[in-house]
Length: 219
Image (cartoon, rainbow, N blue to C red; front, side, top):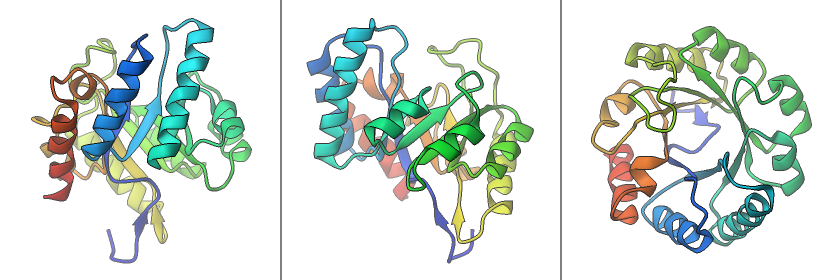
């Protein structure tokens, strides 16, 4: 990356919300992760009934605003637009990237799950996404049947992002089974951000775990 190129998405630890019904526990965990250096949070809630989903999302959004912590909405770019969140993350079945890019504000981020597919990443970059996410890079308890993205895929994804960059480059995000103990080779391969659920929020000390991740990006 040239000295004049800046990332379009924050470098470092990208937390994703766990499936917890205890809102107080969730907010406490988010605060601890942020204090440990988490740069971005994704609201991802698949299993909650709608009233709890909406109440928790509101509480999380309020906390993120208080912390100046960027909040990404998973699956639903319209909600990200309407709530004025930092951006949206879309997978294969979450709607058209072109529609989302046109519908979001220019200042809102758009990220795309690319699995292990470089051609999908290339198409996403042509549609002006801010990051491409590859994974699972390691076996994932959240998505045990997810395609596996190799370190070589990550390197090629980084090269694609540089190919499409001008003065602002889209980021490469890795996801799936990542811990503070196995993330270093991914960063060495050119990953800008690691997206984590279990190893962060199930850690006995969430602050310490976030610090361990953050140190990898600062070393």
